[in-house]
Length: 355
Image (cartoon, rainbow, N blue to C red; front, top):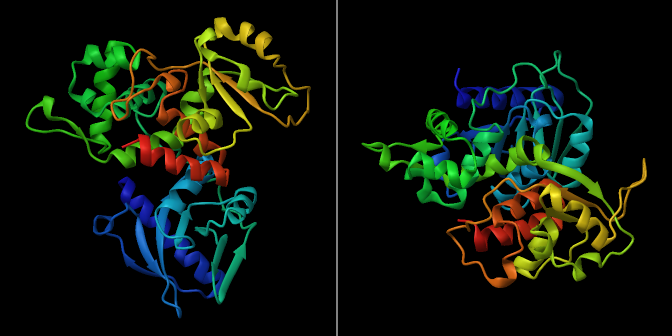
């Protein structure tokens, strides 16, 4: 059974589950995603009012990046016309999705639908077996840490995909032997298309690959390079810090504010090499939060994994942007939070810098 078949099986089961719970019959109009401007997994229609809902199907939803799920559902349709269909939504996740006004149904009957005059909110139904750990996704090697580095290099420079393996390895900062098997895995999964010869490779769907990378980034890559979380009593601490002195770069909200001049940043992410951390902590007067302290200002320090000597091919770096993490990194940082203002800023950043 291929991935697409498994996704449609989830859709069928979820529609059956909500019918059993509420007698609500959702009708599948189309499963042909190629007919629509934005990539969707399916199109379904509400009874009576005829409202169409654009579907995003997620397997292993409880293990996914919450912010990425919200962002994907919000961006596949007009407000209140997206629907998350998942294998299982636990009560905590259901609450967060409802708060973000993300409609959902799952295969065990949990649901949130807000379409006047229909309002449904069901939580607490549990699967008969633990589907959160059963048959975990086999993604091959492409979406493991080394593969994620190579994909990131391709997302920054689409032409790199046809470069010699040694050049790809250098830009991605991975071992030469890793490049071939990651490319083969991406081809097998349909993310890369091959031409008549190997120098005619291209990304099948840039947006789809970007979304998948952003969804996995916090757990597969960022966590691996995380140094620690710090705080401060000074909300303006970052305004007097020049990261160039520490060979570091802003990520997250601060980078987004500098890229777009739109967001008023609060929390911070700094991408910095381990050997420079002590100097930054002293200069900025940052400290570790006390045990069980819920810090008002959260400052995350992470080691950069990318080659800082190269820049993205889709924008011209200015002097002011030299100490900012690449736009894709900043975008992923914003999406991870799931915060509405950050998602709005992420959308603006993507439209301007990532294409």
